Image (tube, rainbow, N blue to C red; front, side):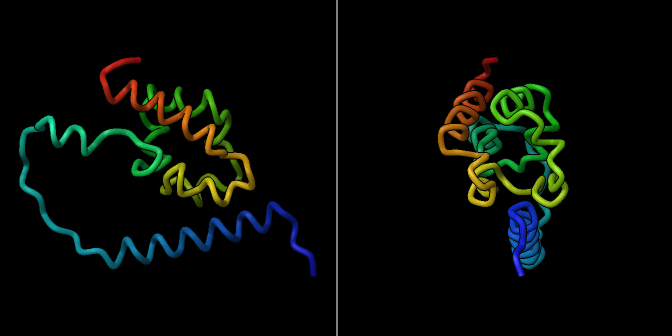
Length: 119
């Protein structure tokens, strides 16, 4: 039985999603007191291809513009709901070459500009 490439990618993304969901649900949740933002905290919350979920990047108009410039239509991908909670670097290996290292580098450069107060 042959499985087409689109089905293979969906299966890989679903497997990754289930593994991530299991890991997330197993992590303890600790209540954090409200504090004012410090420069250190701001850096920890910086936008990144490695740590920021795709849906978070696409929810912010500035970061969405950076992502969509390099990956137009990512939000309309048929499997978007299955991978939107993952990071761009996490999805890249399952993208069948659609999300390359070069594209990730370009996106991160744009995110770095935003993180530094530009763009």
